[in-house]
Length: 89
Image (cartoon, rainbow, N blue to C red):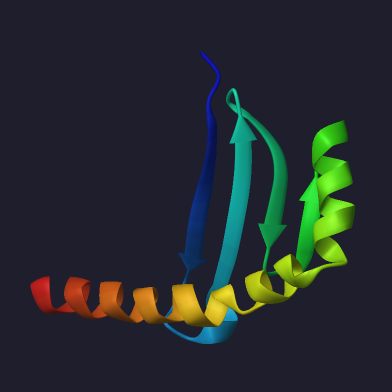
């Protein structure tokens, strides 16, 4: 069968917003075809299909909403994770 899935990732060294990177990757049959990275600030395509979608998404509202995900998604969750980890150690 065919599989399509997305992976959302927050990598961080501290709970400061500058030390957090948000990535969103789209896969089809285990092949990553497009990725948004907060450090790049736009979608990057890795296949022909991904490149076409990256062009379209970088010129639409999709890129604007993803640029805010670092703060709205990662910053909140990093704070929750860090607090939980520190109280358990």
